[in-house]
Amino acid sequence: MEIPEGIVGAPRTRAGTRGEGEGSGAGAMRDRVIVALDQPDAARALEIARSLVGAVGWVKVGMTLYYAEGPSIVRDLRALGFKVFVDLKLHDIPHQVKGACRTLTRAGADMFTVHASGGAAMLEAAVASVTDSAVKFGVARPKVVAVTVLTSLDDAALTALGIAMPAAERVGLLAGIARDAGCDGVVCSPQEAAGMREMLGAEALIVTPGVRPAGEDAGDQARTATPAEAIGAGASHVVIGRPITSAADPAAAARAIVKEMSA
Ligand code: C5P
Image 1 (cartoon, protein in one colour):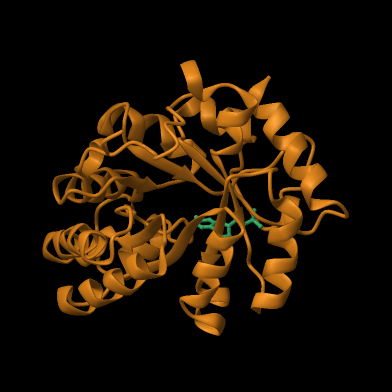
Image 2: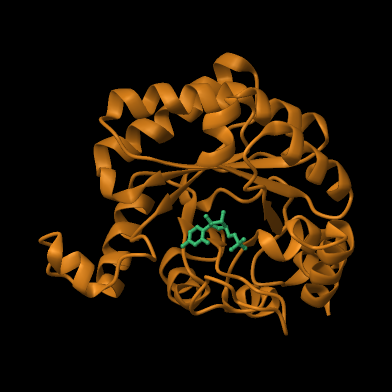
């Protein structure tokens, strides 16, 4: 099907939102789980990824892995059949971001992050770049999702940066700027997901890290939610790392999470 542009862009899988309709079966839920491959090199990342083929639809490549390996890791993961979410949180002058978006589109990234605080011109440059580059390289247009306020920043940290607005208010402001610039959605905590869904509408991508399966140790994640709670709150995708990658059997851990989400 034709993928609409802008914030209304639906996941290519038509996974739906909020666990409704075709989005609620185990197959569809599998396409809403993104496993964070926070590994230092391609060998270890690909070993884990191979074990997850068929169990989840998405993997995430963050700075640790991307800066070690470059665009080839995106191609290698796609060759295994995964959709690839590249989380580099791009934030620079529009010209630089445009170039980075071109590289990520060419590499085959299915979705990647930009910092909404880079401003409207930077976000518009990102969206224009993926649209043009997808045509140029004959690939599907990647989704662009915006990071609003890093969850590591609280109101006190923002005040220290000279930003008087409370974090919650700033999240809404930045999400609006991202939407208006044509971004496809946002990355946010499960606690923010319901508000973002209400603000951005049914088709927006809402990607939530900070997710822990029921009964699992939260580790260094504060304010966690279970995958099912995050989906129920309006997340289109959940990002889960160590509960899957550090498990004795990553595929079994991933399947258990998908089952819990599908119940
Ligand atoms: O291992 P864990 O499930 O905590 O991994 C979560 C992933 O989501 C990591 O890659 C982490 O960098 C990312 N993330 C996060 N919290 C945010 C934004 C991103 O945990 N607020």
